[in-house]
Image 1 (cartoon, helix red, strand yellow):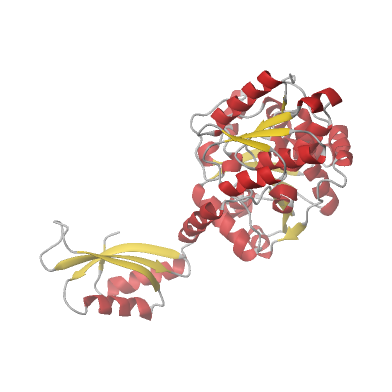
Image 2: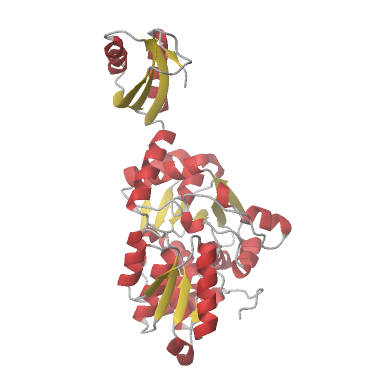
Length: 405
């Protein structure tokens, strides 16, 4: 059992980097001109979404499993995860010749389940939420003797994730701020250990989804505090309680923890796709969401860690729609008009004049709130941003249409 007060040193991270040589990729550092213009300083993406298995999780999982004794390896390893940690453990175990069993929630996205199996792990679907899956994995470890590989709460895992920080310092020696998403805290803690030991002047800023932000109350209390029913689209950082090991490090070394909204996460994911041509999952886009939400708060040069790119295509579709709406690219509204022949054509003519593309239109004529000669029309429009939305609304008002929502 790991001492809850166990810490991680720069030497631990450097040793982890040696262990990962030839295993984990040194992922690219890509500049973002759009974010640089908003922040007023250079902004770079650390592309862990392009890491093997699609996230940083391979780093910590491999270092942890590589450190097991021969007897422990012979007993196999077990993990619980909805996606990224599952794939990291599966590949790490396969590379090291260790048998792996991974518990995943029943509703885990099929591409993530398939990828975990393809990397060589036995997948067992159990529970509706990750907490239930986690308990099942821990019970399996007790029953079989398999070593439980925690996704973030172990010094070896934190040291492995800290190699991201060493790479950032090598790739961007002049970095002023590193922004990184926080779930349990393993990645942020590891980066902070490496960076603060070598460059204590660099600010390390953690980011959590507002609906799953366990770190602010925990930091205020001085100990890990569990929050009830965390809720966010960013499943990679949807953790209800900080890990004991990363919490102690983050409390001492991370300069600030910020929260971001679901709208900001959607817009960030859309920006990564459209501007940087990078597929990033919501958790991985959380640093970008923080930069978009308050760009003037960050001193450059800034490195935003894109921690993963494993996003289910169906979820991606919903998130992109949400992100486009948040960015003013979609406009939904209801209005009333006189129910007579040609009325809809006149309305569409107004929309055409302001270059709004109609995606969908529906009529309501039987609502008791409507007058005898009235009809209600619901419109879904494709627009070009907030200013265009305002022009559309203005044109409809000038044409005499009463917009009601």
